[in-house]
Length: 201
Figure 1 (tube, rainbow, N blue to C red):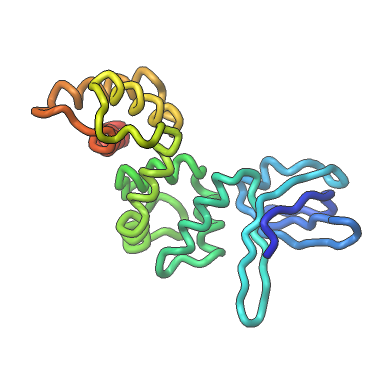
Figure 2: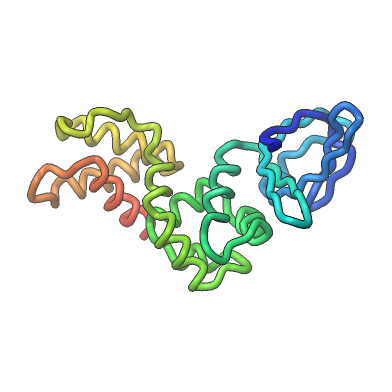
């Protein structure tokens, strides 16, 4: 199972590239987000790889970052989403934007991607929303779930949202709004879920 390729770019187009690794050329299918980052011909490259195995073919899909590969692998775990559609989705939305859209249940953003209909978007949200929320907050320290002060929840939620790509000022405003409206001190998970909905609006 190939998980990473390090070699030299010898061919590239808008959908694929060929990487020479010690004299062997590997054809790798890539999303546009990765195409934009590819170096010039004859230059060194490192790609994170997903190896897709079928009875009649072994196909390599490449990504510039592990985040992109992780999102791709989440997508193809959804019924009805194959590797080609997943690559198309990542050509129309960044990995970070996809995580935010799924976590916030943003159907409008997801159905705005070419090739993604309402049913496909709904399946992604239904099957992957919790995983998307986790992806966005995995930088938050674990093991402190039971006892967190309100200040700790604020800090951890802000860190997670900024890590997702939201501006600090907007994230802070959303968190403060949630904390003020809460009848009881909310958990970190509750704050993140509500904040993502507010920021998506």
